[in-house]
Image (tube, rainbow, N blue to C red; front, side, top):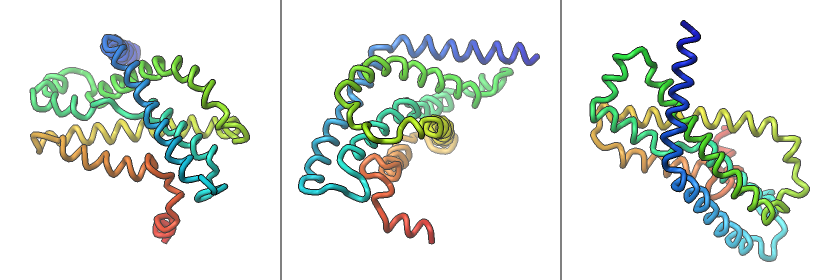
Length: 212
């Protein structure tokens, strides 16, 4: 029985890989477009650090390295419309057929999510390797190699959290027909509190409130 279950999970993962490879050019374009905000961040922080050596404990190079790392983590963790796909399964009644089968729907969605992240990471590898020729010097002097094991573990945890957040948002379709407005509000807060605009530790007042 465990062997059959593992085989089924492997088939679901393979199905997710194949379905995502159909839109491989979309993945490649999304990877290339994700570097556009990085250019804006470089110019923005270059202006902020004009005449300054540090800002909130960050130097210019460490700040740019932070946003580069943020793009990498997003590429490896952020779900691609998984919540809307789950909501569509609920609206169209497909989820009832899935629940009648000996398949855990949550595990089914997780395999599809993992497959999409693997494909995205694979297509991001080559452009990233080329981009590191230009941006690699921003990591000079940073202890990135020492922190790499913990960073990989944190990225794995972030991916699992991101999946369950998207899964939960998709399940709201059981009560609400259109989840678009809720997901927009939620991801707007996530964008801010996730450090996409400023590093979270650049807000000392927030940090103090959190400790209290």
